[in-house]
Image (cartoon, rainbow, N blue to C red; front, side, top):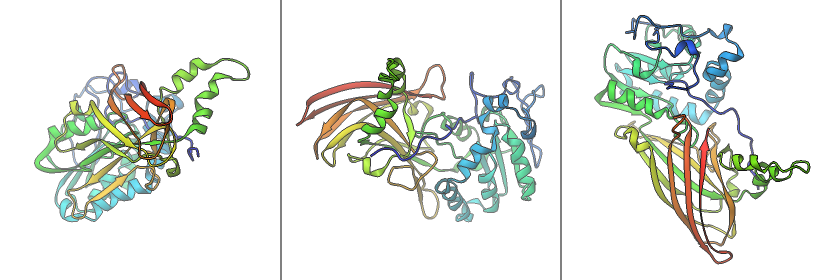
Length: 382
C-alpha cells in the first residue's frame, strides 16, 4: 500500500512575517501603511511604504515573495469543504455568540470568515492580513455588501491599532503538522493585546496525534531511489530527502498502530514558549507488519459554541488540504501485533527561519522478530 496523493503546493503564511519571511521588500519597512476599507481604522506610522502590487499588476517575482497573493492557494483552501464548512457551521449556527459583537479575523485572506461573522450578526469585523490578497478581499467585501460592517487592514498583527477591544477572535491558523508556519504565534499576539477578558477564540482547542504506518513501497520510490540513478550514486540527496517530512494523503489501510496524543493546546491559555515542546509517546501495534514511518495529524475544536464541532485531519477522517505529515524512519521495524514502540518527540521552530519546524523523533523497540532497536532522527519541515 502507498500514499494515494502527491503533495500539493505547500502553504506559506504571510500574515505576520518576521525577518527573512517571504513578503515583498517594499512592505517590510518599519511602520507599514495600513489601508482600511469600511470605517476609519488607526494606522501605524504615517511614513509607511506601499502595500505591494494589485493582483492584475503582480508578476511571478511578486508571487515568489508573497505566495498568498495568488487566488489559487485560496481556491484550494476554500474548496476544502471540511475546513470551510466547519468554520461556517461554527459561526453561522451560533448567532447568539456573534450578535452585536466586535470580531477580529486574524489572517483573513479572502475575507470568507469575516463575512460569515458579519452574516451571523457581528456589529463589526476587523480582518488583518499581510498578504496583498487584501486588495482582492476588499473588492469581495464590497461586492457582497459588507463594506460598512467589515474593515480590512494590511499589516502585521503586532503593528495594528484597533479602536477598541474585541469580543471574538476567529482565525484559520493551522499549518501542516498543526504548527508549521508558526501562525499561532500571531493569534496569541492578538489574544493578549485585543481580546476582552470574557472573549472567545474560534477554534479554541487543538490536539496533535501520531500513529505508525507501513509504507515501504513509497519510501523506495521517494528515498531509496537516490541510491542508484541510472547507475550513478546520488545518495547525498537521499540524506536530505529522508530528513524532510512528506505532506501527503495516507491510506488508512497503511496504519499498523493505534494512535497516541502528543500535544493538547488550549488557545485561551497557551503561551508562545509552550509551542516548543518535548513529549513522550507510545504506540501499540495492531497487526503483524513492517513499521516504516510515523504520521502526525491534528484535530481542532470549537468547544465554546452551543454544539461543539471538531475538525479532524486524521487519515481516517474526510480529506482536508492539510493531509497528514509523514516522517520516514531510517530503518523499518518488523513488528508483531500488540508490541509497543515508544520514545520522545521534540518540536520547535527552526532557529534560522522560525516558520520552518524542527522535529526530533527518538524511539526504542524490543521486538520478537528482530530484537532490540533504538534510534534518534532529526527532521526539518520547510
